[in-house]
Picture (cartoon, rainbow, N blue to C red):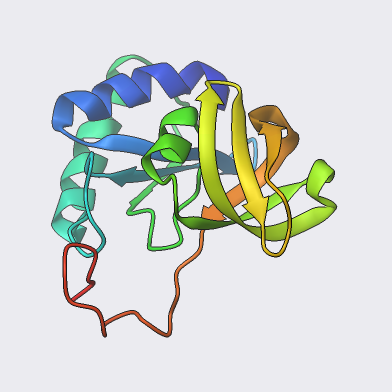
Length: 166
């Protein structure tokens, strides 16, 4: 089954468990596909995300769910993990959640990979970003081949407050 066909059922299943789907990828071979699922807690702050125990529980539940509906073949690998600090930005709700934050974006209109500030999300198909030292530009989400949040590693662990990682 394709990733597109798995997306909604997996997202709905994770919602029922109290988690959000951050990223879904299928890699591996035809004989032994690898299904990579990245999850987070809705509205979690840095340092308050998914634990290893959460990943194990989600993995067991998701495995039962997929197999009971014959959504995967008999031989597959399921990998469940947190998105990490430099989490991917895949869907409009991700972009909305992180307005004002910096991201690394790969898109042809930007001339490749660039660090940008997320300025606005005018609709479900577009995001407005400001490249470092440049003017704001609105991109079609479909034109973005890859995007991840950027973390200022120099300040990680030094800040105190709601976004602190300590």
